[in-house]
Image 1: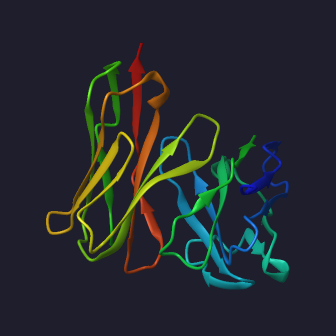
Image 2 (image 1 turned 90 degrees about the vertical axis):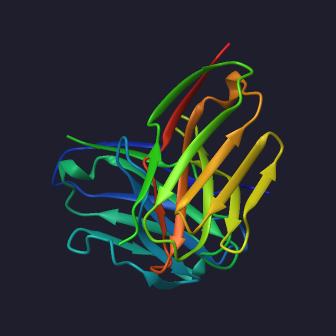
Length: 114
Length: 111
């Protein structure tokens, strides 16, 4: 069974530029999560989708971050414009049905904002 | 507000030693607790998931216990190996229906 795929793996941009990350969850997984992990900290949930609907986006900085999950499969996370403090690893995870099950994580996208 | 703390932040042990990693949380009303492993430059791998009604879970050389009343969980690693070197994170699922992660324990097992 293929795991969670993410791209790109690394991205370097200058502040005020825009960037997009892509995630393909495990086939058949209804729930998809985007986390932000700042160096030395644990991951923080940005947004959770159930199929193509948003379940929780309470910690998503909506003035600059946006995310979508078209057709309940792939998802993209966008930052526009980026700030220095957005430098982090962005992790995508999926679970079969809901938040009470094991989450499977992708390798992450490491973002550096200069 | 749920807060999760992991102690120690870093640990270095010789190969073959049994060790315990600690996780504490402030709100005992949880649905479950997971222990994850994170290797440098990689995502997280779920090791053990303990439901709120359970006291422990075991997988190979790993044993995780949960004491909700005291707000604590421990991850026991038996006969540690250099391949166990990684960061270990615990995460708690509680009333907000999202996992709150600790900052992790960086483990180094010396050959």
